[in-house]
Length: 334
Ligand code: NAP
Image: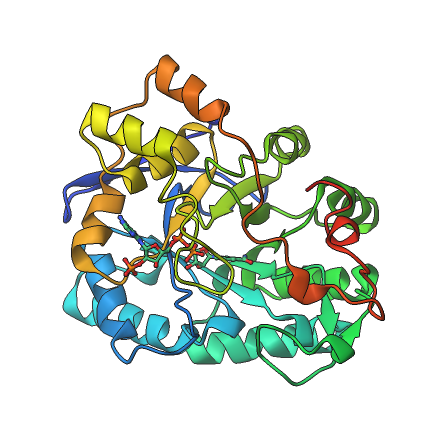
């Protein structure tokens, strides 16, 4: 169900309306449509800044970055240029997320890692700082796949205390996690002074995450959906979502694209949704999901699609590491 706290911002420049919702930190509201910046291979395009500026022009205000993606610097440059050009009146109008990579998931590395991200972004604070995975690897490398021999146990207390410090120092307005199961969230909640505001996870019609969504709803943790289109063409994705016959039929019947059906479906589940496209026409298409809705019958058809996780994260599993199987990584919630 959509949050009762949902508000509406008018985007007069791009003439679109993107709803948003407040997080449990009660800081700035998070726009329910965000723009993904993870291209694969990371850092492979040299026009990312222009793409991001285009996205701002088209009315996107929520941007999802990560230390891993190599997109912090171009995002920062696009923000600076958007301010200079008057596309946005102030930095306050933007909601910027970045993430702590596994090689910085050591208590003493978290604050310095965020300081480095802020330097890359050219910003004084991020709106949201996320622990990218409940995974720790030896300090130093920013790469996916990680080296299996570098996998170490994840230090919940040390990492989360330092995440809390990031918020207390004003470097992050809100803090949260990504790729956490219900069980891992329970553990985190039991040791946290500041509960996570967000859990960013894979959500799309082929991996609907009903149990996790319900759990987070009860605990006041907002869900952000990543890979809503199945992340075709990346290491972590496939074409399964874009080739779903059920989705193709619905899209055809209502005169929308399959991508729009996925994004609208996610939005109607009450989560915020991140879509990545560096193509201007597809950016527009992905944005135009707020002036129509899916019928009960269409939602019902989507609810019956067989479920299979797109990215089980075998990259983080090793017989010699802390997670011996994907079952352990996701605590059986897979
Ligand atoms: P996605 O948004 O599901 O899919 C992106 C792919 O779909 C790209 O190949 C894109 O190509 C294509 N695409 C976009 N719009 C389209 C459209 N309308 N029609 C056809 N194809 C379209 O995948 P994602 O990038 O994995 O997820 C979105 C964001 O979530 C990421 O960029 C990242 O910021 C975040 N994320 C987070 C995690 C995490 O662990 N926390 C993991 C994965 C992703 P073009 O660019 O050519 O349009």
